[in-house]
Image 1 (tube, rainbow, N blue to C red):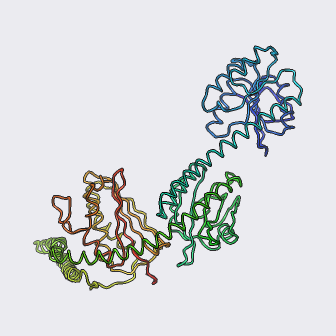
Image 2 (cartoon, rainbow, N blue to C red; image 1 turned 30 degrees about the vertical axis):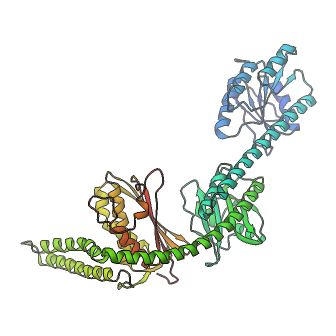
Image 3 (cartoon, rainbow, N blue to C red; image 1 turned 120 degrees about the vertical axis):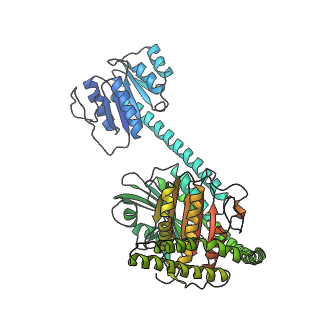
Length: 560
């Protein structure tokens, strides 16, 4: 196969090399006559447009198939009818018979001036024909018309796709008042229109006086959600400051280069504005040379819709928070009465002292082993003493379950109790063939709490996950800052079968369990601990299986 792009130099019959130009249009010339190729390329150079040459039909088809794979199809094909091997009519038939190529315009170049030859080509799908010998002006005119039609069709097709995507985005956004769902829907719609490395929505956190990535879609596994975008970020600052869309090419340094690990980048940034208030920005990021200003109009339309949706979602959130506060007060009264009725404290104590009692029993048994060195005996006795102290703390904690805990509250990095819980459960996770995927955010905002109680909550969630995956599986553990709400989020997701219908609303009620040997107190105790930390614990059960427990704790103003 031989190819070339060259408009005025003499061409050899051997390998022909493509010359890259800045011209937007590109023609594939299929002809085996070097003189004719030179003439055609000189004419195309006057349009102007670039060209690639194939000397026979098979080479042309191979080129087109490569173009399909790379997404760089030519704008039209000039196809000679008389070719070595399969003739132009056969090549035309194969092009128009391929769904990937059928929309590609083809102009036949033929020395056959008969009506039959012309009509045969047109019936087979040719868009036009040129009779040899031809006038260069005629070739220019016919190619120009085909290219204009091609560009019009492409523009209409693109506009139709954009309108369909906009309609779908509007439908998805208008169907929900949940802010995160609104933003995810908007980015999912954009993904169907644009090929990008990352899409992100950055919102203004007025309380923290910072810009935070609320939602993002990244192609190569980078976690952007919850990250604070520096105020000195040039693209964001310019877009937000002027309240207008900004397009920057070949950006080599900055927050986005560092966060994505890519340089240089093309960045499109459109502010989210409503009633003269800038709520945030919508960003499209791609490797340099992949984006252009043509997308700004589309993004501006989407940003306008998202801005209204964000404002509505925030208003709804304010009402929802107010309603939740009332509901929480009522739930606490009902729960306290329910706990008094079922004797929760006594049952909880029996449940909680089992593990330290076993540790004490094992330590004392080992310390009495004959022939054991005195140093080892002392170590086992110290372990037993530590567990006795833990039992005292458990009793005090259970007695104060609905009063301020006796354990000392302090500023805590939540990553530490998460790591402690994983370490405690490590052997059991290993024995049950469960892979742990841990993603703990460094420099996590501190919370105010009791480390041992938080460890107890996380360990209970891990044990629940282990029991849900008796045949092995995967446990995903992650922490993140949610600066928009001033929270630290801890999530545990298992690959088990999920929660049976009807069980979810009873998960945090004491003595309600689906396990043959369970007491039904673990989640109830965890719920109480998290509430005493002014936090919430939620559960998500996707249709495909698995369960995700999410603990949200308020960030502390103090440093850990």
